[in-house]
Image (cartoon, rainbow, N blue to C red; front, side, top):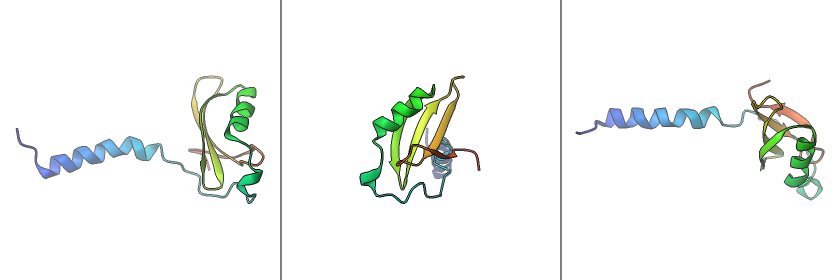
Length: 95
């Protein structure tokens, strides 16, 4: 069975849709503090866990930490966090 270039392009485009929907949506700055003053990702994780979240991943992105969590009801929530204070500055999917 031969596959046309159009079918291949369509299949590739459909595979990319889930990746695009998971892309970060916050485009602001979270802090102007130097990285030497940022909390560690472990500290940010601990602060979110103390508030009842299950934390999957904490990663640096620009001047923010992205914190991937599940709330008390098991819903996935991605927060954009000031890495110097652990304060939430945004949430994926919300403006």
